[in-house]
Image 1 (cartoon, rainbow, N blue to C red):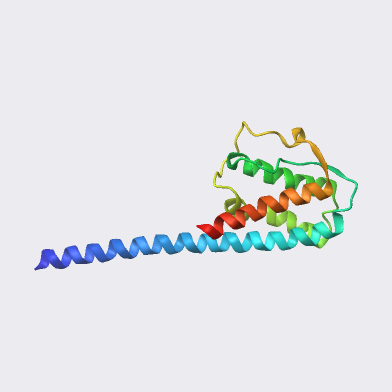
Image 2: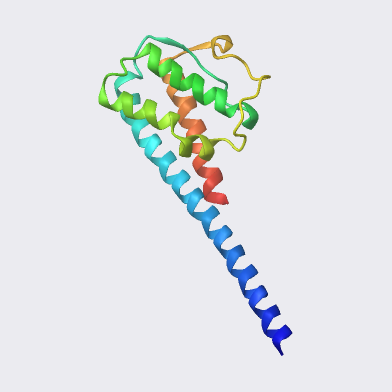
Length: 149
């Protein structure tokens, strides 16, 4: 009888632990998705003010590989910081959000920078509209990916 009760307790413990892991992953993905949605709103606010800028910015390609996602994200953030006035509230918020760990983990499965990725300066220069459209596309892909999981 004791052995049967002990096995039942072990089963219940294992079951509860597995549920806790599943719910933690679900909460993490929900937080990541909400952060990316927040970034998208911030991006749209900045985009409206800057999309007609004549600035030419180094812009990662539209179909960025996941292993190069972090370097592309850093390239977008660095361009925003250097090329535009990041003292404005919307720009500061967007720059901070692009650096946030939830943004990074929500966009990129790979959490390590890959040395085979193109350097930011080697990406072709595009106008501000294309720059913002590609960044928006990257963020939307992350939201879509997290929504399917």
